[in-house]
Image 1: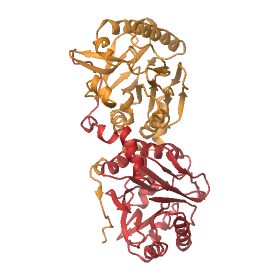
Image 2: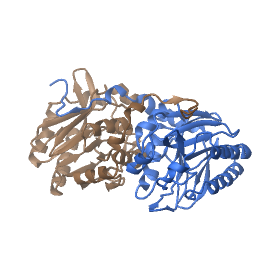
Image 3: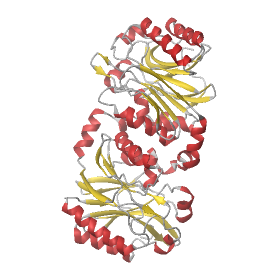
Image 4: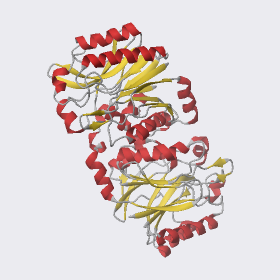
Length: 270
Length: 270
């Protein structure tokens, strides 16, 4: 399955402009044969918008997400993008997956909130999700989530073959895009797709460096710092080939990871 | 504390030659101010020696390790190196830590054996160790062990500040040295020191690329493919600085990592 990542600046608080940008990216992704378009964290509203998230947050079946579903249906491509989700009094930093028929297939709420500002604005999610899309098992994470090896491992053990990550990683954390995202793919022998913002937003400078990485840890595609759309093929044969060489998921020894022993350890012949 | 990594070829099955090489490396490391010298996996005997491990395996207090202890005592530097350990009928792929007084401070048995040959030759270890050396909390892993994020995480949560790794990583796995070892340092905000073999041994070509990596994921020192000794300073202030910016160890959500949910997940307002 071909998938696309859309590295983009977005327009803070301009939801209609961002929906139009989504529509154009979807058309371009389809033209390049993609079945899934992955966009950055908080794509609909902008990320660095402070208290505006409280006004702009959208319920799962609200009118803005219905417009996004119409784009998916009209352009015939699945869409994954970040948005602030309203649920009663709570707001989540969420990512929604809409299939090419316009059906909502998953809604993931960021489980690891980054820093004091996110913790002030959002309630954290409490569940991970793996969903089958066009024959590929897809896990969803958002930005900071992927920096914890536990998250990707949990999804890989649950069968995820592709981890799709709307993100908004900013300077000085560009090493996450260069180092951590490829390491997650390699150590779990899966694909990772990391769709970042670029440019500036308020006092933040985003890293760009969006990428799709294969199970051997090598970049299939890698953006620079400019906006753009890149496409790569997710081929399950690459996972199979990797897992014939290394056996990370089955060579684990979970019973040992709980209690490392401090201090002097000698052989049992002592 | 300054530490040294000794990237080396070694002489297969020539223990006396390898001890002499250890002595010379220890002298060089001390001259450069190091308090700890880290050598590769199976340093004493060679790694790719097949059934010869059964004859060359040494008990923990056997004569060869006493010679190594004498080197530590005479040159006044702590030594960590790999060797095949004999314990009754069992042979382990072990790493021994001897302090500068010649005292054995830790003996770690590789817990994740790589491939069918290691599994045929060795019994796996069943415990991790963190030991204080010259004021630094030191965790020990061997080669394949560090490729599992769970191992380093467990040691970091137990207080390890430096993960020292005798290794024998060979082509085509050089990405482990370039990508995985720095990622482990970054994601746990600790130091990693990875001392690899180089050159050829039988049908194996080792990657070299030994390194010491800081808590920000950047190389402090990095070898090429030639033999050599490199030194870097392990400064706890670098850990503190990293952990003031990011909070990986405390932002974890272990309760969520056990049961990712397959299939359709929608908001709770559904």
